Amino acid sequence: MPNTLRLLAALFAGTLFGLGLSVAQMIDPAKVLNFLDLTGNWDPSLAFVMAGGLIVNAVITPLILKRGRPLLAEHFRLPSKTEIDKRIVIGGAIFGIGWGLAGYCPGPMITSLSFADSDIITVVAAFIVGTFASRWILAHRSS
Image 1 (cartoon, rainbow, N blue to C red):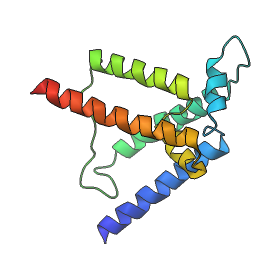
Image 2 (cartoon, rainbow, N blue to C red; image 1 turned 180 degrees about the vertical axis):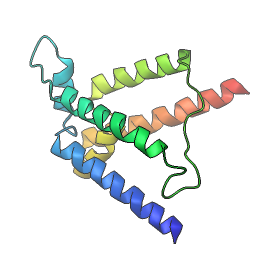
Image 3 (spheres, helix red, strand yellow; image 1 turned 90 degrees about the horizontal axis):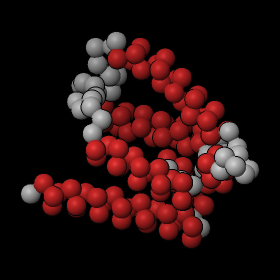
């Protein structure tokens, strides 16, 4: 039963996130591209969506972490690495370039799969190839 409850909670959270992306029109790559176009048709709405997410996170996360453990897990899974290194900077730059070129980051990209047009399928395919390629490179670099 607890596993079913966790799956239902994940489904609810994902659905709520996707709905929020849709309402904020963040599944439209033109919104992202217009946000990045500072000298043209600049659209600041993405900044408001990000600020809203940051504010909610800044207020709620400390309250959640005061609990002894999560509601549906044995313990909190927090990152142990806290320093900014070369991999984080390079990965962030690659992510930002891809986001700027395609107009999608992973959340809106997955939400946009419901449209099933050739553009989004191409972006998702590139995302999957890039994810597996980076994992393969890191695995072979370590050994």
